[in-house]
Length: 291
Ligand SMILES: C[S@@+](CC[C@H](N)C(=O)[O-])C[C@H]1O[C@@H](n2cnc3c(N)ncnc32)[C@H](O)[C@@H]1O
Image 1 (cartoon, helix red, strand yellow):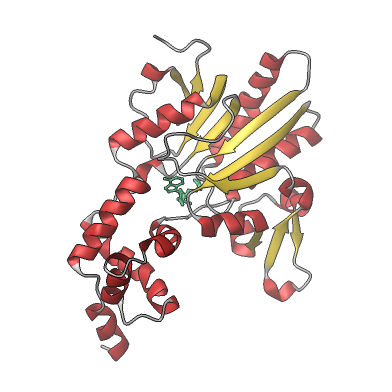
Image 2 (cartoon, rainbow, N blue to C red):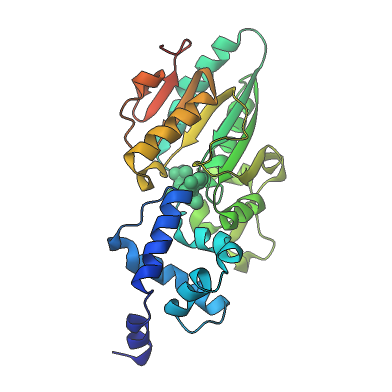
């Protein structure tokens, strides 16, 4: 075993500091951090130890809780404990459903005028989900659908929001975008050695990113959103938080609007708050919520 490996094994958070981080994150962010995640959390926090030039994780814990630096460090702590994995066209059946069923239905409901869609990616991470929506909707417009759209992407992690706004992705990230759509909606870096591309400005203009904590009592978002995607974040919350977040999101949907969660996420009790399941992990708000 190398010396570096020995050092990492010895470099742990003090138990009381780990418990304080767990309590804080569960209370403020909603994310559950069971003991099984301790090694992962410690691994991620080591970059903060290096950035702050501290002596190890125990010193980091003291820095947060004994030396009163929690406020200054809080944003970084949240960035470290959130899992931001995402992909373009992740769970592609959802985008097919939106293109083939949901958006045409909303257009019919809109009557004769052009449909003005409001879409919200409520755990947007680095923006792949929001830009996938923009690509799908703009492609529909090009195919003759009469609609316009605006997309809001929100997340609790400041770091990912910055990257989402830039709209720059590696070739590996961009690979799931079908080639014809990628040619149209992604600009290649001038320096091909960089192996990255940027979402075209015409799409970036229609996608806005901002900070929002799903645990907040009040969401600063319109209450007539047509489509909300809240995918692959509820799994990190406990059951009662999941329920509260779903109820809260549903209040921002207009009647007939759609809420889409991740395929592995449970939506027990959706019917009781006026959400009917219309496809796998897709729910539609009924026109009149039950009393
Ligand atoms: C695994 S990513 C999912 C990204 C995207 N929705 C997808 O399915 O590809 C989960 C995101 O939820 C965000 N998140 C976690 N807790 C949150 C909270 N309380 N409020 C808002 N966003 C949160 C994380 O920062 C992370 O970017």
